[in-house]
Length: 247
Image 1: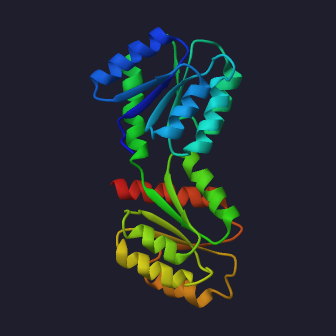
Image 2 (image 1 turned 30 degrees about the vertical axis):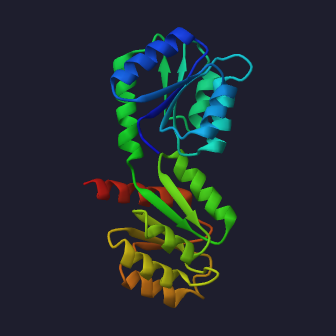
Image 3 (image 1 turned 60 degrees about the vertical axis):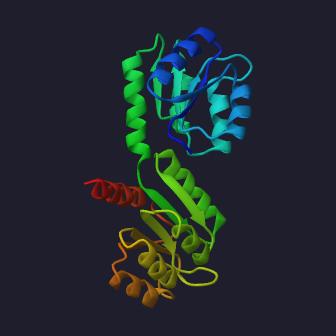
């Protein structure tokens, strides 16, 4: 997906045209939609890096549209816009993972700065989540996506290895007990493909997996966390890794 594709969703046609003109001058490829339903139809046909989404629209408000958009593309950056004092909707949008809020009349310098900030954060690290539990994969994916991280998921070690051969992953979260090749074998293969990547091991069977865990840690795996996972601890670790990788 190109990081120049932007969709503007607003029932104020004049504002959309003005914003589109300014962003096109900055080199962005712009599409517009006048309603949440039209935006959803466009997103099903084309990938966007960023969406400007008006909160107060007829039929389907911006927050309702945002929720449906995230079901289609959980990684798209969404910036809400509003001319009204709708704090409840604003808070709901931010809780759902909106990147930011712009108030009308728009400050275009602030708008451009917000786009650049989103690029810096979205140029973040790619996290590969490897676990045969669909529930754990989905939970971790949702948590990291809401924090602005890019993620990919795999049910088996083989699936993760195949993906890593053609995509640069920065962090691997590896369950030690996988259905075919185990977590240690998966880690060693991924380490060979992506030697600079950081591996976080997770396990719900620490005693059974003790030897494998210790072998992986001796091969420079970063740490091992026990299930059920403490999400705050996991996020702190990943945030620290991101900082180290950027420096």
